[in-house]
Image (cartoon, rainbow, N blue to C red; front, side):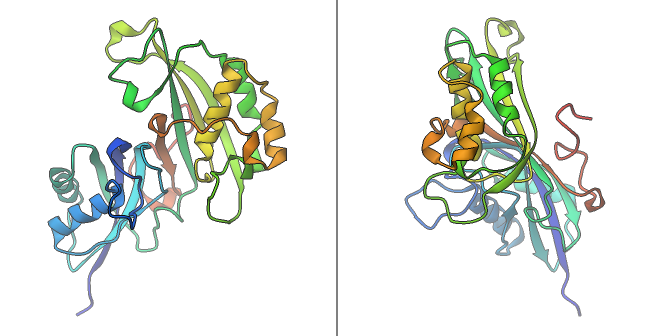
Length: 281
């Protein structure tokens, strides 16, 4: 009898604070990874050693609202809802499976992805709100959003982003395409009574792919522009330089979120953050 193989895609949300990042690490003294935690939950639920592949490797402390992962289960056709509920009953509360979907065997969470969206959140106001502190970077000085928008426009299109790649990253191609950018001021939303004088500056970037710590390097440089410490046109000079030393400080990981991953329409994934433009259309 032919062995049954079923591939599933999972929409995963997590708070990255207590994890060493997405990828399993060899060092035993590190915090657990998201990948290892998911694999252990699948082992407990199915009795199988199952490899989980994510759409991207978020760094230590980085969060996700729209991470996508895939895995294969042998010898049984699991109900999608049973998998979703069962895994959430095993996983720590810092990781949630939003939805599970059966997908074709040729689907790959990373290789099938078309584009991704990351957002970086600066908190604005007279002090840092404690309930937002683990997920944002509080900046006391009012940021110049127009200057930040101007700076981001220099990054749109296809460029060599070597300057924004983390020092010590593995050698490889550094050309990437930034498809859309946006800087917006948002109400923190919870509780509603704190809509003013508090707020969030959300920097959203959609691209075909991202280098290690690329968005955090962009965010650190944008902060300098927003505070008036360097001109927006410096982004053009940084790209041309290909020099990491020309980039601003690497922004803290805690304010970075992987929010959306897009796939071809014929994959048939759920109606989720992986579809639509910045405005949701």
